[in-house]
Each structure stands twice: as C-alpha cells, then as structure tokens.
Image (cartoon, rainbow, N blue to C red; front, top):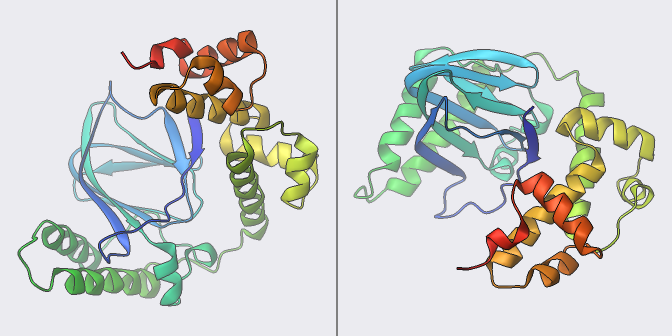
Length: 270
C-alpha cells in the first residue's frame, strides 16, 4: 500500500511564485511509493509516454499532451505501467490568494482541456528555460497570472461543497505540523488533539483516512527519518535516537528497521 505524506511549499525563489520541474521521468520500476498532498495547486503536463494520476480515490489516464490539475489538499500519485515523462508546476498559494483565486475555497476540473491553457503551459516552460530574456521574470509572472485567470474563468467547478472534508484536512494538517515541531519529546494523542482543537477519536479516524497511517505510525516514521538525517550528519546512533524522542535503543532499532528497511548504522558516514 502507498504511504502518504504532507508536503509544505513555503519557499519560492527567484521572484517567481511557482516551482517548475520540466523533465520528471517515471518507469514501472522507479517510482515514488508515497502519495502526497499539499495546499498548493499542482499542474502536470505529460510530454512522453503514458500512465495515470490518482486523485484521492479517482484514477485518471495520463498521456502525451494531457494536463492534470491537482486541487488543494487532494492526495495524489503519478505512476505508469511502462514509462512516462511530465512537467510539474507547483503554484504559490499566497500568490493565488493575492489575486483573489484561493485554492482552498475553489475546485477546478482535474483534467484541463482546451488550447488556451495548453499554450500558456508550453509558453511557461519555454520561457522558464530561456535565461537570456531580459524580461524573463516579468513575463513568467504574467504567464502564471494568465494561467490562473484561465482556470478561474473557464475551468472552475461548482462551488466547493466539501466543507467537512476541508475541516478534516485542516485538523490533520495541524496535527502533522504539531508532530513535526515536537517530535523530539513524548507526545500523547490527547495533547495532539487538544492542540488542533478536536477530539482524539475524530482525529484518529480522519488521520488514518487521509494519510493511510495511524498517528503513532506517522510519529515513529517521521522520527526515524529525522534520526537518519542526524546519523548521516555525523551523530552517533544513540544520540540520534535520543534527539528524536526514543529512550529505548532496542525499540528504536526495531522501529527504525520497520520504517526505513535497514539498520540505523547503515546511515553512518563511511
């Protein structure tokens, strides 16, 4: 079963309100084993091959020249039975809000049809790769604004009726942020629920539904990933375990191996 992770995009550089990866390649033997979700709008343009994009529980075919839109807080995963290449555009949520196009309160069509938007996307890619244009930044900002206007005017679905679902996402997101900020100490379900202003039973249910993991599984997995980073940076295994909230080394080793697939010592600098 796929894992699920929440991604937080907060740093957009070079005076551009987006991140663009133009040459992502996936094959049947090399793909991410985690679905992800985030606040930001994400757009994917297939350039070669074919595959599919999973949006929550919906699977959408994805082939050359198709454009898939991932709405805010939709769990998604791109895969293929053979090979696929695509461009991936992540748009700054704050920029969207500044021009009164709020991804959290709008739902756009998951598959974008029409020549206009496709032309914008290709123009964005071409200009993004052209560092010689003296007005590159200004033109890129203009194109991304035009893309958002096109989405709002011609690809917006009926007003979002999923208020309860959004509230669940907000609670789960808040829980994840709280865990990440406090992973180094003992955490209880009661404390986490109290900090996200919900009851622990509702939080536990929605957390498992959205992430595919229990809260304890998520905490242990995040702690193990942080411990691996500390060990790779030169800390001892025992220090890394303690820094990540583990007080029993045998338990840490067992949990680490179950989440990371190897022993902590394998992350030591050689």
